[in-house]
Image (cartoon, rainbow, N blue to C red; front, side):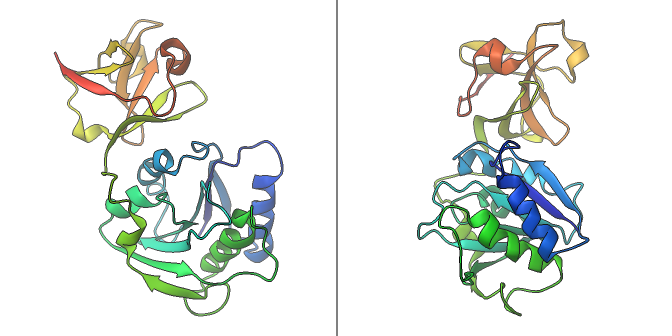
Length: 251
């Protein structure tokens, strides 16, 4: 069993540490893994398409994922639990779990009805999602006891009907400036040329197969189409931002 954090909280400041403190207090001895602290800020749609690629392997069945990109924190949006192909997800109901649910073989979902006596309206990650996730990690099932006072809901209600399961846009930059997209590599033939911001980029299997400084696209280690520059930053070299649209050309 492990707890995995995927948030837009950043490593700077107190927010991630406060969430980890709650998990350590309420689920002592259970490992906490920091997967993402830099999901696209305020952008649950972009972040959603990272979750299927990164929250499945290598995390085993039973893993509890705490996923928070929550620009609507403190409003009427629901706090939810989903069990997707054997893994647990605790998150706001704002589309963040869209791609995980839409690509699942089996999914169940619950609205979290429990609220602590004192909860900040601006920090549900610490005050609601972390205690719920800790209880799941300790083996409490939805509906057994607080903080898992829940109501069953249709998991498809967590999907946005206007979103597909593929997003032909830049959704994330890693520390090297590589630009991940919301497209699975197994859906994109390597003989196609990727077009973005007026540039046409060829496919290469890995960095060392193109000259230094050359931009290209490849399928990254988690199966997503990614734009890179050998020895450089695709974000800086091509002037990319999250949300940039990509198109395809035939060679």
